[in-house]
Length: 91
Image (tube, rainbow, N blue to C red):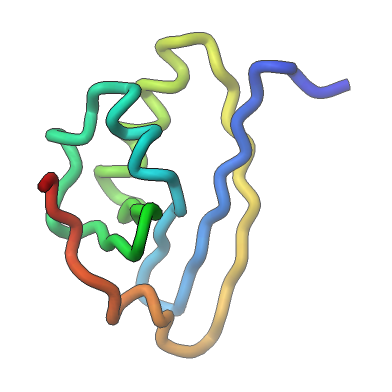
């Protein structure tokens, strides 16, 4: 039986890096949008948090609210198209 307070996060990886797809509104609601770096990417309403620092900021905020996190991973041996998305900007 899974925890009803479990958040599933889709993670996309290529041979060099990984990013977690989250909705921009989630970052705003958690009041951490100003803590996300330009190393993350964005496309439409989705922000692709880089795995090293920005994802930790997001996960720590969720855990602080009592949520558990489950990762759903997707890997490619090619260059991820995420690398060609716009760099994350607050505004």
